[in-house]
Amino acid sequence: RWYYRDPATTAREPFMGSNDLYPWHSSDCGDIDFCGFRKAISHYRNIVWDRGEKLYLGVRQPVPEGKELRVTMWGVWPVHSSWTWPGMEGKPLQVEIYSRCDAVRLYLNDTMVGEKATTRAEQFKASFEVPYVPGVLRAVGVQAGKPVAEKILKTAGEAVQLHLTADRTTLGDGQDLAFITVEAADRDAQLHPHADHEVSFTLSGPGTIAAVGNGDSASEEPYQGSQRRLFNGKALVVVRVSRTPGVISLTAGAPGLAPATIRIQSQPGKQIPAV
Image 1 (tube, rainbow, N blue to C red):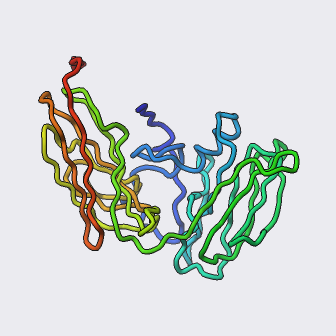
Image 2: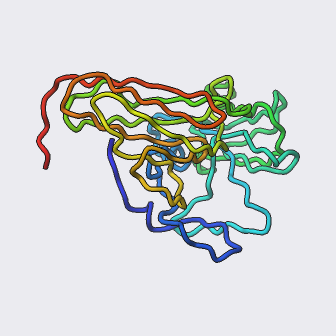
């Protein structure tokens, strides 16, 4: 992984209406958060610069009643790839589509909401105001009148289980790292973006938990420890292997959710001297 820390600490988009700026310690701008989870602006830039992505579908985060959101010069409005908004039934949501196609069509539960151009003149994006109804939100990219790309967002059911996904499951021994994403999911293994359970981690084998995080810019939780609360349904665990080959087992558990376990193989490899 590459790490770049600059705009993540220079601007933020707070919900105004109170003076409780603490405990914010970073911003919501930038392409990724402190855990490396991509934000909507990352997908938009890929589309603008034609870096392989053709279509992105997201929803602007609603502003809590009685507050306003001010976007700074560096900032962008928070957009989430989610159609799970409990409590917003019947209320308008702003749907954003980023597209490298000529136009996009938006459907809600198989009913067409509308079609808009997304060429360079429209800055490769379109926006629709849609009253929230649980179900399936679908964006279709259109090129020369024909559908060429599709993105789907489904309303998640109740969170019932944890999922663990590692960027690598085989590591060289001696200070190598594995980045493991933790997600709360429904019965269909779909991420529940509003889950905020506190997850505890246990590890066995030749390794240690180097760090935990969740991408929440206002979290007061330490980055070192064996537990972390989910944010937007996710968290991150960084596991460091020792110089002893073997199998590392990491288990995540939270009240009300089925636990998950992942295994990582530490094998003999070239030792990289510390700098």
